Amino acid sequence: MISRKMSYLAKNGSAIRAMFEEGKEMAAKFGKENVYDFSLGNPNTPAPEIIRETAIRLLNESDPVFLHGYMSNVGYENVRDSIAADLNRRFGTAYDRKHLIMTVGAAGAMNVALKTVLDAGDEVVIQAPYFGEYNNYISNFEGVPVVISPREEDFSLNLSEMEQKIGPKTKALILNSPNNPTGVIYPEKDIIALADLLRQKQNQYGHAIYLISDEPYREIVFGDYEVPHLPDYYENTFVGYSYSKSLSLPGERIGYLLISPKMEDLDETVGAAAVANRILGFVNAPSLFQQVVACCADQTSDMGVYIRNREILYRELTAYGYQIVEPKGAFYMFPKCPIPDDKAFCQAAKKYRILIVPGSTFMGPGYFRLAFCVSEKTVLDSLEGFRLLAHEYGMN
Ligand code: PLP
Image (cartoon, rainbow, N blue to C red; front, side, top):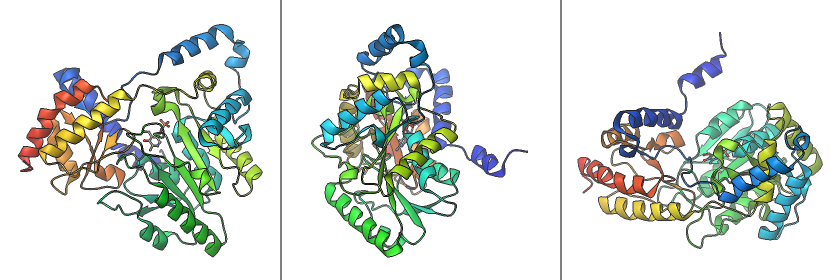
């Protein structure tokens, strides 16, 4: 008999993944071009050509024992040097290899950070709506998620509720900006207020409260918005980063965990995170793609398609009557459903061969998430369906 916990999780699996599978079935039935699949954050824009060239060059020119071998659990030294230099150039920081652990994507980074800091029963505060996998990551280490209710007018940080809910058992707070599923970027003034609150709570309870910043969308920003670099604002900060979205490499599983140089007990924390990376079974991040991203740390995929898709969808959907907080980053929007039952609404959308994910998957019931990392043609072809769906619910 398998574990009760896994049995439960397998039966209540990811709604996003289920929808992704359903999308494939619908594509087989109706033709791929007639299904408008906005379910998964799988970038449609290809990785820049330099990624392929670099991978081929490395395969042709490197010593295979070096390129495919084990290395230190935290990753190759030259890779961490190169990423530290890139971060220092961009953020005026003074990181070195010691502050970086190469990880299996942002998911790996988040699991390593949580394993490093959590004891059973410790609480992790999260602003809703949020990426539902955090619940699983926290439960991997017997932590307890503490959900902060959304501020629906703009999905900004609900600092007054955080003030009430951060207590003696709080060990960490997860922040994700630009945000999945809302596209919100938390502005500097809110980050300063949050850092002050966390410092005050650390003093009150006499132990560290870690800020774990999940930043796979840091490079995907529309317009002139700044994404504050959180270690500049708060000492006990981990940053989980990933090349899945910025370089369209989600299948390659490559990212890093950055540990603030001002972290309490820095050496012990870095050492523990390295062990966490090993014993979670990752051992180390994929070797070839560590070397690839080290050569391309300052590159990104072409974001043009996301900019256009966002513009078209925001303009047209609001015209059809959908209420949407305009996304500032990432490639998601989180419109309000015209009925409270978001699952029923997403079910109804399938009639128009539109696949969208219920907000309750993100602890944001009454909304739906639209991942617009699809082709512009998919967006344009889907519009009539969105219009008819809105009409069906009396929105226009
Ligand atoms: N965090 C957030 C907010 C995400 O949206 C995702 C993936 O969609 C991840 C983490 C996982 O990223 P990765 O594929 O790099 O592990």
